[in-house]
Length: 287
Image (cartoon, rainbow, N blue to C red; front, side):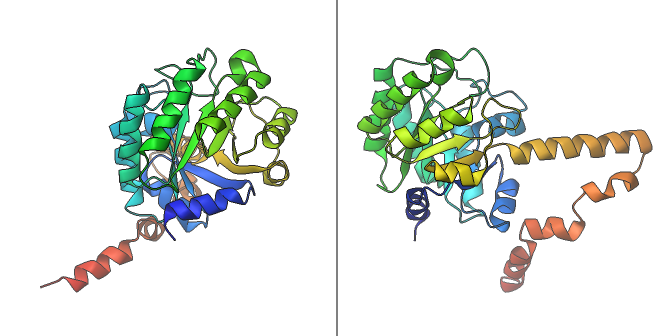
């Protein structure tokens, strides 16, 4: 089964599949190793970890596509990829879909914010006119080569005009051909329940640690019909905290002794990057 087929099948189950995010190939390998069924290539993570900048629309389509390609080289998981605004208008969206599909994505997420966009849990967001977003969705649907490649249409209008406006937009996205919709930053359990029950296609919940949306847990989200639950930057946040703690100890104590339990061992690190596979290749082709 191709990754696109696998993702489409998993989404159809509406079982609130937990999908962690990865900003690089190492995190994606850990996600696969732990048995998760899909991986989210996070735009915020690429901005934070690759560029060291906030999620305010500073990445490019090619930077994200390069990240997708490096991840697709080392994992077999379906990759759901954050396509931001399509990196421009409907014509730019055509190129973005081509880039991401060729790089190994199984789905692209497109949103209706103005360009440059902001993290969905930041204040001060703005959205484009509905017709402009519908053009992007139609362009994405028309461009994909693999019909199992999923088009995820996200709206950020909840923070601006309220939940009813967001549900109206999501319904329009469905009519335009979106396979999955994603109402960003609902602010209560009640709003999550309405999203899951009032929209006809599979839904995404985005759980940001410290963000605007409460986390009711997988079981509740499954009961409300959600297909995907994103924890887009849990790996990034964990790595940032651990790095800070380890380096603080190293600076202050001149040793790693007090933080040894926070460090992966040498053998663990080599297993994470599948060194045995590369050793076997070296032996096979040794002359």
